[in-house]
Length: 346
Length: 286
Image: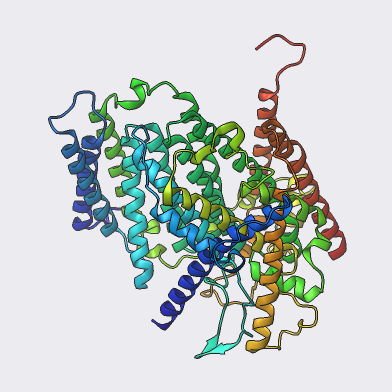
């Protein structure tokens, strides 16, 4: 019973914190946009505009929720919910801090900073959930009964399916090295060998990063939205909180992907002088959590910075990049890694 | 042979009767009933009833949480498959198909086959059904065709389908090796050893000693082959192995030839697809 209670507390903490974080990520995004364009950005509500996200949230809720008469109503309502759900449940296997028998002790066992610790298929689960995210977009586009939305939905389905393949292949190098799909095992391996994934798998990191941008629909790959060509893409017909949910979903994806990049390739909670696993207790756990969180925040800022650096791809170039560049590179990376590993281990 | 209990036989019959009747009522008919909505609702109720009878036929996992989830996933998969074949709109059909796939992978998860569950979701729900949706949406831009909206021969179809399901149920229940109860605690690795390994099939052919097939067999197919580091052979049989490592070990020792064969078939299919899809330069227009 106590276990289930702890689980519920963990789940509500993760849900609450990520949703709150999303609100402030939007502020960060606007501030970075302003900086890139030599503007000041939101600065009217509260000191430095810090209350802006709350006001924005209230605005989202209070706006009139228009459901146009020509839409396919059940699917139209289902689509934003699917977006949120698929973005949220991926967090079940993401470790937010050190997981293992050496965690800080509370009650009668070490705390695991992960909703579901010890999942053997960890990263596969994230890929499985991530592959469902396409439903939210494609259904929104279809149900809107509007040709711009529909084009956005079709583009996105093709884009997401295509980029899933190199994304899945790019992590295989790391999986081969570590010998496990468990995210904790991957961090522990980097901790033990004093080397980050980016050093041993530079090509894998590069491919994963590019695919991560495509999977989150961020610029330079935001073809499903592409406001100059498609009005608002798949969410043209949505208003009020239904639109807000798509927004929320996108930023949740950015958080998940940033965690994945940091855990797979940037050492996770690895801190240079804290490699001894016997160092337990609250202080060390806190340091490790902050290290992980700091890296993730830097990664998120990087994602937002890229938005103002690169222009959007043309659609055919986008597909070419996936099928003719990324997939062969990912296969080559996998084969080379496997060969080298076999030769080294003998 | 006939070890089936009368109660089970009745439940089989009721399952098929309710299921068949319910499916027939849910089908999109050419001639409308007086109240199609009511008929559909009654049909749906009958299918749910059939699904719950089906559940009573087999056992379910013991812990209460697993039991609840097992029942939810099982009923969802059966009812969603009925909704899938009776939906009027092909897009809805595809979506119900996605629900079927998701609940089936939930059942896989409960049975301890996490890798299979994740693979099913990635391949079927994430890629294949999305491709279906893609094709349906592109093909039906100017209204739905009659053959997509209406069932052609609902009565004959439900009758045949449910007679087949009845046969299947009887065969499953009378075959003691496949009893639901005896399958309760089976680990994925045990399931894999119940299939005839390909190496045994090859052994039956009795190749000469120097034949390449027997050389591969003798070198690679011994179970003493180096297992992955995470595979712990010292664990007692009851304790679950690290799942992916156990699956990988089984695939590349016991079932090596089958895996290689599947790989070869997929590669040939890939090459064929490339040949078919590539436009011929300088040739006749297709």
